[in-house]
Image 1: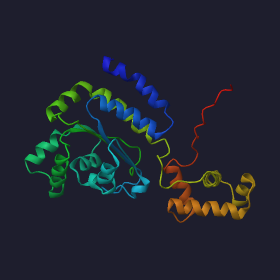
Image 2 (image 1 turned 45 degrees about the vertical axis):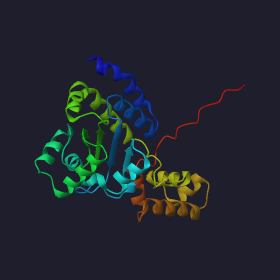
Image 3 (image 1 turned 90 degrees about the vertical axis):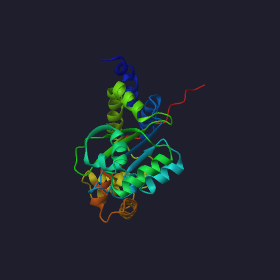
Image 4 (image 1 turned 60 degrees about the vertical axis):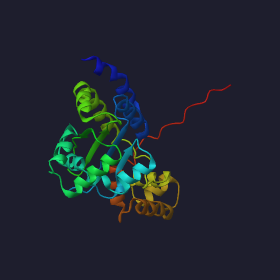
Length: 264
């Protein structure tokens, strides 16, 4: 094992033990930044159809950019117009963006992609690396984009990739595998603790009366919790709510305990 891989082993252990998406992302993005990729974007959906990621509220979007950049890149759908997005949806693996530069100069991209590349050039996005992760379901897709820092040329990215490819891929893959097991960060489709409990008991096969007894509330209150859960998840039936909450890691999750404070 090379010195590079040995050096990232402590980082990999910390990522494996992380309890939140934010912690995993901070650890991984700091590592990428140390190699010259201070700007990073990550996206994951369980509802991919063709090139559409589904409802953005059901997807995970993470970036090291500021709020303005996040709105520009994710909320306005700019990412979907880029050639690297097309590549990520259609492929599994990793590549530098040299092919984008070559295709742009040869006029081989679509007009929409040509315009997206020009916009990226205008904000200093000229070189980088993409990782498209293998998935276990047909509707899931995750990808990572690492943007080279200002002043780092495409040729320099090629050299960085040649030296650190194995470390980058090891950290990226563990980051992705860890993130997709954790609840989404600050999910817009959040559930209250009681809504979560009600869905968990239903998923366990309990009737409304059973759930009422277990939660020590009335059957009407259980129905209210389930109705509000359906509304939060934007589904029509409780069965759909259980399925969607499970997919989004919103139920049956271990809640991190607050650190214990020693007695004085």
